[in-house]
Length: 633
Image (cartoon, rainbow, N blue to C red; front, side, top):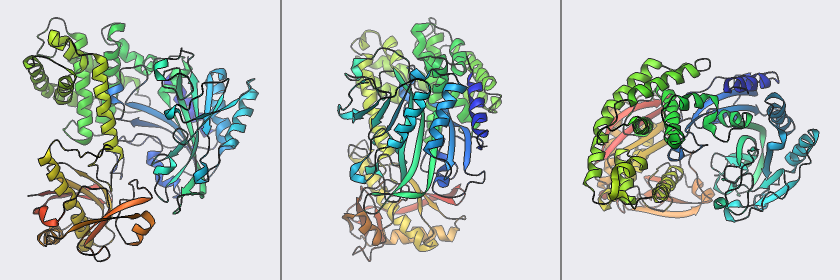
């Protein structure tokens, strides 16, 4: 069987023979993009080239991009979820299109890798009549011809909307039409969520069929996008050819692009016919190095995934902390430590971590560095130093969590979740050491509570009004009580005043590049080419506080986006806006206001409620991007 290294090498060679230039993997820390913490896809570092900027390496590119995604971290432990992965990618920037891309990737999978074509199923876009976007019959015909060449008659089946019970089962199909929820790509999601002038297009996904039995808990019918585990997506060709217009419909881009992404680990699982992704070579060597049998497989998978992800994050410059990237690294390391401690535990004091986990995890780091030595250079010394420091810090936190567990008379699902969130104690530890007090706690209840948390977290991450991630999809603020809610609201309104004051002092080249608001401070990123002087910082602060002292009314007007843009209201160009937006403004009429921005709230009623604004820090974030931090009192 081919190794992961061989698959990666064959993929790159295959596309280089077809005129593609190999580009290096970008860092896991996006350069010049303050809207996301990590590089989560192969296309992410190439966005500007899809929009028309010439790439220095030409119009045909190929790479293997290291990626890290946080969305599924709590699901790691099953047979298919990981946080770190490699994405094989090939790109056409206004060059070839469907007629070349689909035959090439099919040939690569079947002839170069030897995947059985009878195990492959594909999906295509079914069209969106209300947007004037036709269904992708061209891709269907290409797929029919490709399958026919290998002796397979490919029937096309319409699925509908699987999220609303629209799936109709396999029905002998090989090609499946899905709507824009499944077979459309843009940075903002399906067409209805795309802002004006956002590019996007239909895609065609390739699924591998492991032939396992359908699990009816995922619905009465199985189909390629079913989550039961029978099918796994191994590649996706995005045909980016549309642009959303002011009237909500779509027109063709002057440049048609191809964006292909295929997870290396998933392709390797298909090549080796392993339904368990952790049985492929790059992960199996880590699983085999851990103690415990099949009963401990969930813990072993968590450790293997988290240690690999941590090694790459540390090498790219992340260090443990209580916020942003550092918090995610800390979470990875501490979860790995707990699960390794559980595997090593043999009668140790329940309030302490077992003594053997450190040696086990350090050995794993060594295996990871050796496994990837031919492709990536991992900083072994730095990885071990960061791990040892974090391990020592975590001992006290873990002990505190276990003592808190001892104090509870009963441990039900909400209590267990608090222990998990505050101290990192997973279900297994709580259940094992909670004894009779945790008798009623079930994994199903715990996972259900965790799923609610995940959905709220994702909603908060995805729904950023004007760049401010303050409101969840439920309409709730990220605040625990009324006092916190009031503080966040004051800081949010202060951000609008600071933005307007920065533009007044520095000029219209200042544009928002991102923001983050907690109950303690506001962080505002903006485009500007140089460091601000002390005088400029003081002037910005004074102007904002003058507006506070005038106690101006903060008003809101809802209007069509096209009309709102004509008023000169500011908006965060990377945010997602609908066809109707809210414009918040201060200081008289909308036309003569001091500040006016697209936003979804929350805001104080009058500026005098904000309190005195103090800029506490000014610094560089990336080339051409500055950051200020501010508080209110």
